[in-house]
Length: 421
Image (cartoon, rainbow, N blue to C red):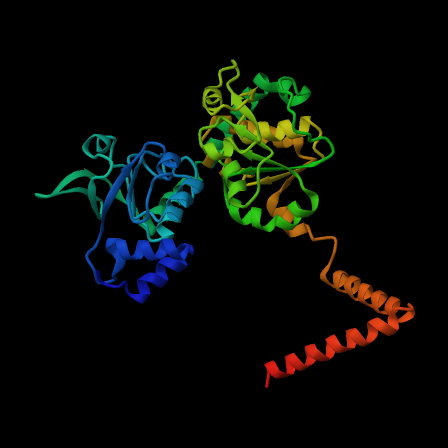
């Protein structure tokens, strides 16, 4: 196979700062590996209507077929992290409801995106087929040649920019709908929001402690990394929201509690010893409870129409946490819409409820500094050394110990001198 040109490798790396092992495999396997090579991408295809399920089995260089209206930022970043070769979307990646960021992220990483190819592609292709994507046309590669299976719209930086500009005009309509959803949510959940009615009893002790709530959202890896000194010093209660539990384990921590509907958390996380709180529907149905029981684990349920990250915050607040630090959660209007749920109105109201305790992880990384500075530590060590030397010199044993220490020092200096001569 021909080596990729330096310009192509540099462009891909700078576009999205891919990990080197992903970059190497991707640049070597894609049809765009050479600037002067044939256009398009040819690779194995993976199909799933749920993007987050697809990314669990997607391999570098493969082509992803998804059904995702308004491709959100988290899903796009997950596809890029997998090293996807090209993305074929059954639905429009930008519908115009709001300026979602997913398509731009894919194009910035030099990943071809073909939109609106129609649902028939799921019947015309099977997982593992060899597929070629050239321009707006998707071909199935067989031993007889290539058959056209779908045609769509090839997204370009120019088309995405134009769609994002048009979508900004739709924000007012989305804001009105968001306010209506918020009022409806207040009517349904006022007892929970105002009085904490329905919050389950848990064994994890949160009273008087900090709570670190991790959602596998925007930049969660970077946020956890910046919080290491904070975690080491304050030892907060670690709460993983669904896949956030795996994020904690990837960073080397064991979650104290896992909250969510259990659709995107691994078996390893569920069996790590953390207390499990299953997010249930308002009528008490909890589809995720069966999975927990099948693993031989116990759990409590939390019925609410809020999102899982919201009930984690409400739980921490109700049980007396003095500070709630959020990693990867949603904090602004575009992020609420990016989540794609009418229930995101609960996120806005939850933040009103716990706002006095809630701190975003990025704020902690900017404001928090270890209470022991490097200079303070050096002065502490120097003071200890002076105290030891003084004690040895003033004690009766000093006459015996001093020559021994002097011999050790001279031997060290002699060894150091020989090392550099």
